[in-house]
View (cartoon, rainbow, N blue to C red):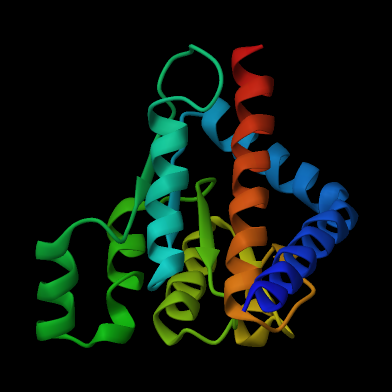
Length: 188
């Protein structure tokens, strides 16, 4: 068992180091978020399961703070309002739980950060389609081959791995780096 756990740590460490290759794309994503926030826009996050937790985590980092004392940034996790999620799921379908919120909350110039380790989550892809129709920028956190979401993103941070747990670990690092870059640009 210890050998397996050690191997997983080594695999994770190597993957996180490989994410250094995503830094130019991450810089582009941070620039888009900074521009949206400077213009009074909103950044919204969505994902399922572990990605839902990360969506809420990253929204909280922007609203509250990451490393610096500064004014609150406009950010929302579309995963957090159970009344909206269950109403949309019941009245329409689960595939629309994020898209309906995007239609209500986003406007041109805003940003949707869509998290899906496979890039195949139908509700996340539907949210990306709605965001694009509105004129919002779509930043995708994906893995594997990027799935359908890859083609719906303006900027894609694709983790070069196939294991969901490893991809989520890398998404956590990338999300923290994104929050740090945004905060540094806006808070100094």
